[in-house]
Length: 103
Image 1 (spheres, rainbow, N blue to C red):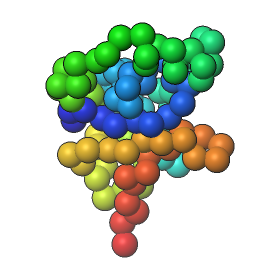
Image 2: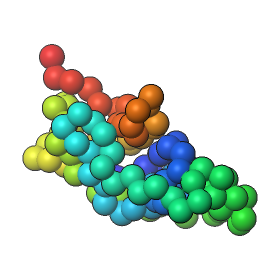
Image 3: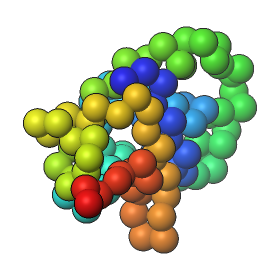
Image 4: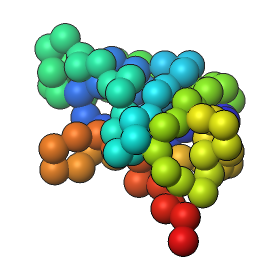
C-alpha cells in the first residue's frame, strides 16, 4: 500500500499525515498497535512538521505493509488488501477508520 494516510497526533511514525513505519499492525479491534508515542508529545510533532517542507510526492510513494487481525472485508490472510487506509485518533485509541465488517 502506498501513501498510507494517518492523522494521529503524537506518533513517531507520522510525517505530515503519512505513516513512515514501513509495517503497521492492526489489532482485532482495529487499533493501530504500531503507534509509538513521540518523545516530546504532540508539540514535538507540530515542530517537526514545520521544520522542513516535505516532498509530497516522496511521502505518497512510501510503501507500507499492513498486517491486520480485524474482522474486515479487506483482510486477506492477515494482510490489508484495501488500496488506501485512514488511520485516525478516536476517543481512546488510534484506529483504522477504513474497517468494514463483513455482512
